[in-house]
Picture (tube, rainbow, N blue to C red):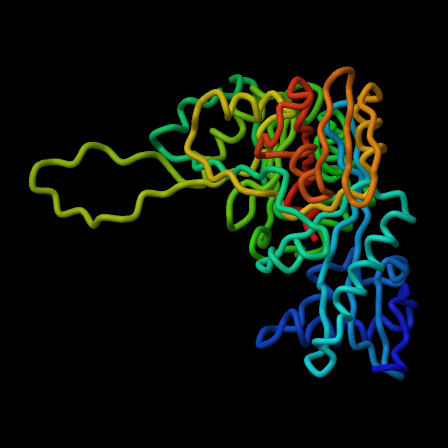
Length: 374
């Protein structure tokens, strides 16, 4: 193990070997789909954002990264997503994964990222290298007993849907995203790249668009996958009306009262899932105000790279932050709190409120849509 090369940024010509390793470890026993699942990561232009360790000509440990700008109202966070941390079995137990992750954090810092995000089933291992469960992801359960609580579309509205994301559809979605300023900052090029990738089979797949139109053009949209509505945008009343209209088309109307003695076959009652942040958009606030049933979970594990940059991006320059021996001290006026890096992730992004410090402005909203998931 003494002659290993790296960790270092990958070169474009190493992509084939990187994908062999990623598919061998991450897709073991399944189809080798890493290249298409995450085409916006595993391409020559993004190769320098992949960290590798090599033994001779073979890549033996690696991790991919993708840089995204996450917007939340007036705030803007530069986020680095972690993808496919993988080490060949014969090279495990020598600390390569730890070195790779340390190099990834250093690389993200050099790229100007203020926070890193990943999702995993091995939370305890990532906690040992500085990451923490934080942020919020809500999945609402829409069904026949609550869908009528949402607004309805105006009579003059029309609804279209399809699976062909042509230039007009992409540009309409991007305009609505740019107006909402919620989630990743989109351009038509980025949107097209994300749609071409099946970047999370557990959340995406068979994606279609649903769009509400009014005089002058598209007013709201949803992205619908086999698992439910995974993205939406537009004014709250139009998004709510579109979701309600799409529910009626996708799920159908509730059945009539059964006649006495009816032998009609019984089916499981249908539901439509919808993902949303806890706040940050009038439609998210509407969903919360209705107390709809939901699953509230972490939006991954976060690593706070640049707390000063995060605070500044939200206009919180009155909060001072300093670090000493791994402890971060935040101060505003007479208020002060000291936390570890992991606890800092929760202080800044919740969902738990771990301190009364600056509770009028903390926690901050950090949100990326499932289509941006890495």
